[in-house]
Length: 315
Image 1 (cartoon, rainbow, N blue to C red):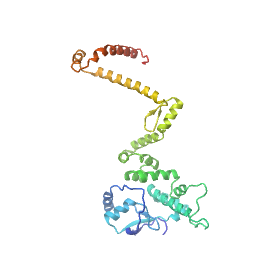
Image 2 (cartoon, rainbow, N blue to C red):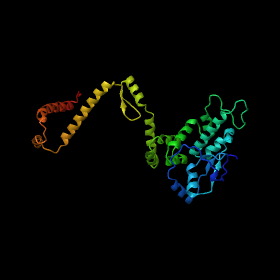
Image 3 (cartoon, rainbow, N blue to C red):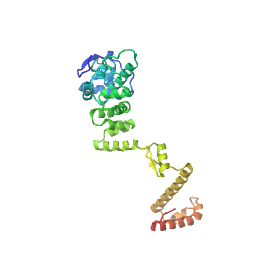
Image 4 (tube, rainbow, N blue to C red):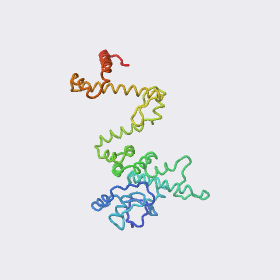
């Protein structure tokens, strides 16, 4: 069989799925209903020995739900992809990003298997050896139509971790491979929500997520903070300092005190109760300590007010 755009029908019981990365198939009944209504818009792909390369969800929907005996199929001749440079452009134009990812994975396996064969025999003409210093994934990525293996790795990450909605958005070109890879790091519900947002909003979210992933780890942020003496944000969005545990504890106590005073002042300013009426109720609420602490608190508030008015630093 030759790899081409020709679509042929293959009996479903001849196709072998094998071990797959994707375990969650999503709503196969809904997909089957769509196929029954609109037809199979995109054929599945198999190797010459009938191993499934791409289109697992479509295949399962057709075989298990619609009970079709045969399914439209495109044969991917891996050895042809290894041998012919022109196939790179053909694959790039003919297949979606997720399909090219599956092809690259098949190529990786094929190259790896052949590289592991006996070296005292001449390699087949249609399977060139991987040049020294070149990784198998680079060859597979290039032959599958990716510009480089990083794009392949990103697309692979989307296929393995992305929801069907995210994979579809990548395949349709609605999302770039890089943007889809960023979103694939998010929980499934988050992925679905973002994919449905307007394009401008999606771009902004992807930009923010990408910047967040470029931030240092917690340990790295603390190391930089120790060296620079500055607060450094980590990937969690929290700022880290280079202080020791004792120094951080003291700083936390200061911050807790500041927050406590802030809340108290806001509560005092917003309370609807009359001070005289409130004072008359204190005994009822068993607050004898208020009598002793009120003068100190009042003195502190007077100094606090004066410092704010004079715009001086409060220690």
